Image (tube, rainbow, N blue to C red; front, top):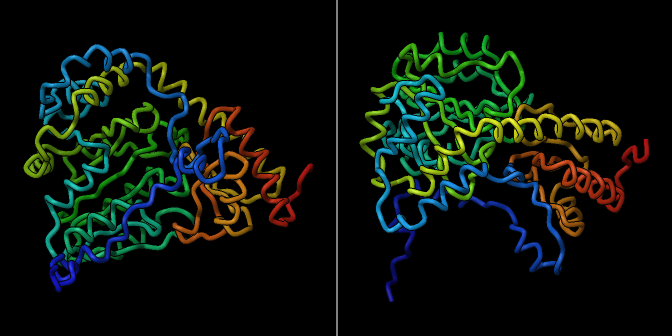
Length: 377
């Protein structure tokens, strides 16, 4: 048996990485507390599931899964280009938008280069920087949103990638078109600005920017979107980036062959065409946010108004203790301590029935924890 610790064989930068924790699954909850119906509101999934057209497309392709998928995702790229008026040769598909983030790192980051993002970040931003021995420039978000003035001031000659999650996970806030335009005017040519728009379909704020217009103008910008949320295909892992042809060429150099499965490609093409299903999912979230705000106002609980399919709220108690109480009532959420907010939780917007179950469980859990909520107000 070797006497050399495995850590001595690893690249030092990888030792900084904390493995991603997805939270407890419904099966894990049931194993811990017994047979109970679990409402999972922890992962920003779409409870309506995929479009029936996506399901039909997957069934039709089942007998072809012994064949490698189209490595260029040709049909999906063509459908995306038409849907979003984006350049065909500027679209790259991946295993979720996560893989596009990783491609950006592989294509552009050298050891010592800088990656700028908001703190708390989406986990893939620091993970990509760590994997490639790049330096992290994490900009605090004390008012729950990206401070783009501070972002601009943080840019140096070593800055390569700038990630702007818009809407911002975990808080659901956005940066406006005016803020983005002013920021981009200050970004030098050696930076690629990445707009992570995973929750794009849920935005109803008219001040939201059209980041794709900067791509059409040839700016060094990438816009990332996903089929995991509004399209209900989280289990298939399919996302895409829309950028300039010059940037896309570099991403395709580092892209793994056959990276998007045949099932994912056909399901995404079919789902993209079903605008009625996406609108139904969008309407459920927008209406659900408003109903949840009303319940939180009734209970006297602070929340951050959201443009995503989740709400970040301050329950005023330890989030892990609250998670345990909610779990025992058959509801799971995301605890805020992992984002640096120990009394907050992030709750996904579900169906009206799921949200009623959540607010009932929340009120009961807070009472059990001794919170002085305005119950019954």
